[in-house]
Image (cartoon, one colour):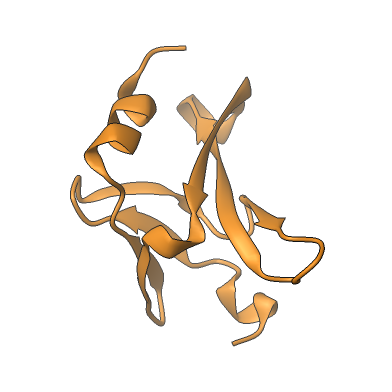
Amino acid sequence: MRLSELSGKEIVDVKRAERLGVLGQTDLEIDEESGQIKALIIPSLKWFGLRKQGHEVRVPWHHIQKIGSDMVILDVPDEQIKKLDAPD
């Protein structure tokens, strides 16, 4: 799969049945030595899609369960979910 094919897919957490973002609005963390994708870096959004300053969520690549035609399904562990729910 090409990076361009990932762009525009919604990122959904299967445990919370919640949309976390859209690929293309996220960053990828890439291992410089191996070239492998290590994580998705998802910015937290507030009303009207404006980015909150300095807050983002890092989701390791191994938490991706399925990449479908419209979305990327994540299975984020409970301890990571607590970090997502924590106030700024």
